Image 1 (cartoon, one colour):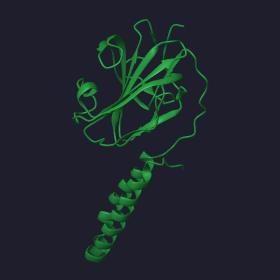
Image 2 (tube, rainbow, N blue to C red; image 1 turned 90 degrees about the vertical axis):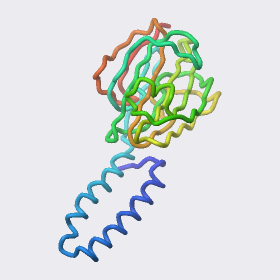
Image 3 (cartoon, rainbow, N blue to C red; image 1 turned 120 degrees about the horizontal axis):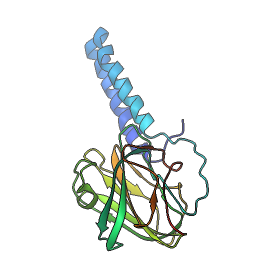
Image 4 (cartoon, rainbow, N blue to C red; image 1 turned 30 degrees about the horizontal axis):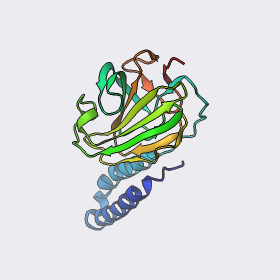
Length: 217
């Protein structure tokens, strides 16, 4: 199984902790040590599972908006996007549990025109105000259909590390990686009002594969 590069620090800490606790359990608990080691081994395995990088065939897209992450659609509504667009837009929010793949992907193809990191709170990721009050990043892409598409990585109550690798001027390719979030969080995508939404609340998404909307050319 291929692991994401963001796993390095976490795996070192997890491995050292596992080895230390295992040693203490065997030394002090002797025959009872399995009561500690078995659940600990499960947790250790979940850390590897969290950082997995699945192989996916990413296609070329022009008008399609691609799911930026694996997760569940929790919000589709008209909102006022005040940071970039300064106008109304359709917000599609996808929540990621700790068991989902946490690679963050471009939802559309085009050129990156804006990026910014915002420090903030750590409200639960499904809280409506987390989009504007939590620790987050904002990225804007001028799409191939000549629309400005804004999207945000949002930290949650557990997620405390957001990484995004893109730079202004980069060429964005729908479905391709631009960042990563650790341990549960949310992605918001802000689309033009005339966008055809192809997903609904409750849908499970596969990042880089599923089409969640289609923009007008």
